[in-house]
Length: 376
Image (cartoon, rainbow, N blue to C red; front, side, top):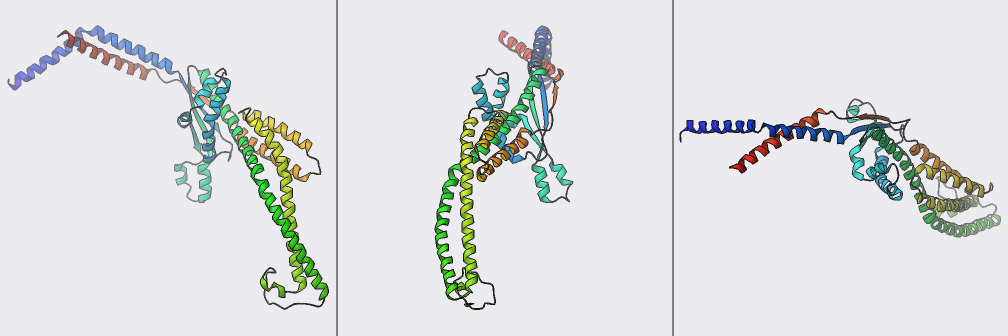
């Protein structure tokens, strides 16, 4: 077979291909229409997409604290969904936020300084640059829904969840720290008290002996030293008795102060234990930070009534608890500045229709050639 005959056969094959497609134009039209319908349906099902931007209060959040919060958010959302049994109006939002991967994909923090900004700020100290580059300025959240209202509702639910869950986790961390302190610190303080009481016995005897020696040797002045000497040094016995007595009484007063501080802290921990027992019960009953904060404030007020004005240690413990709750409320309960900015949009119809048309035509061509192959 000559080369011209091969080319002629190819031309005939191409002509047959085109004629086959023309003859089955109805199949191509049907495939294209089906593709358009599928593209339009996909566009309709895709719905609306929204992005919510929340500006964080200055210095309230950094990369470390945000990562800690994100690690705890899915568990809280799953727990709330399980308690609600899917009957809450925000069940979809809770199911969505209960997946850890959703937070990584749809929630992104923006920092005060980006890498491009750092290049232009060569004159700022490294400490200031590190603090600014780790400080979060705003948080962007992406959500999707079947309607504009649904997207806005989901965005508001996410914003509300972040605030109340961040406050809950902060209060939970405080309560857990209280629990650890009330369990471990008393034993340590009891050991300190026992050691200090024993030391007081020896120091008291030492002071008594030195006072007796001073009375026995009223004119004893001791050796003269040209340099400063630690009264506890082995050569300190050659110091004047008055100097040794002052050093011993100083040690005695220091030990008494240490003992008083340890007993004072024990009294503070006793009040703290009463609050912690109540707080742990409240912690397991509700995962809404604002509800928990209100309940804890009530417990603090009741505890303050039980602590007498003379109990300075108890009053200090109550003041410390109140301060910690207020701090958590400011840093986490009021995490965002004002109301979030929400934008809702729908993707254009052109791309889904174009992809659907191309897919329908390709399917039509494939169907034509399969039918022709089966007819042979």
